[in-house]
Length: 381
Image (cartoon, rainbow, N blue to C red; front, side, top):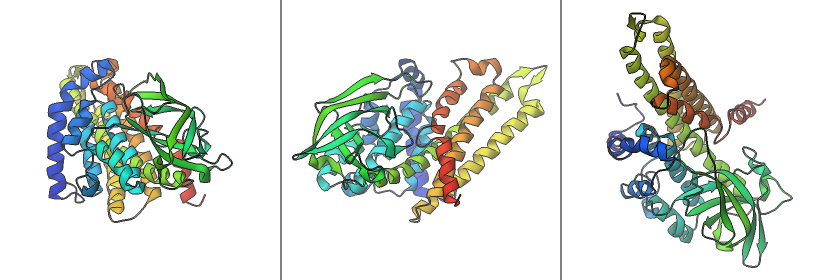
């Protein structure tokens, strides 16, 4: 039964995305996991189908849909069988392009936003550094004004899509004497002299999603590549992070549900001590607790998304939804792996992938501890 926040148009979109995911992505999940990569043609195909710009303005190349279309995409991408593929697409749709749509000039939108929505250019978001993650104000990559442009020096790490990206939304310091007020955003083509991918990182999970270390050595970029106002980058990027977090919450709830459903089928077919595993009360109760936790996290996520749709900016609720949903996803995956017994620890079982992939969301886009501190501050503590 569809949730009341979704219209018939949302459900029609859901059917369309699901058909694509099940036909063109899911069958390749194991192959892409083994290769620890997936083809760039996925971006182009999703662009052709209109899935990379669902809630962007038609004038910018998008579909003109509402905010809730983002939830539909995040939920249906969870069915693709690979957290890495879903992550890479999410970065394109919810991390990189929204700030360009909100703060970009007409020329910047034509050069970077429209091609990204069409899947012709792949983007990455350059925030995290070896010495600064959740502490965005602590970044040290410098963009110093020099004549009619900027010269950038520094490094980034843990950059999703960093190896394959055609352009980077770069977060850099334009005033080293300031923290928050010294940050600016830049759009950088990755073929710019001085830009280098220094290493592809080897991760515990999210294997097909390339994650890079980047270096900038006397990289010169023109002044027109500045996105938004100089010195306002922190506020611009923190606004973007809220959409990133809500997308993560929606995907986490969907991923947890898929894992529970698959585990319920497994325990009904697996026998031990002369009966189905599903007949043991302890097993049934574990799955009942998982389902209850998912429903609670999904309810908070949907309510929060509805508030955003109504024009609110509920930062505390978004933070709570991200915290609860991503924790729930990992806890559910861990419980379900346990219920698979030894088979759950085998690489041939999808539950081990869910367990590995779900762990990252409790770190990325704001670690649990950062989310908790933000919530406490919102409470006046």
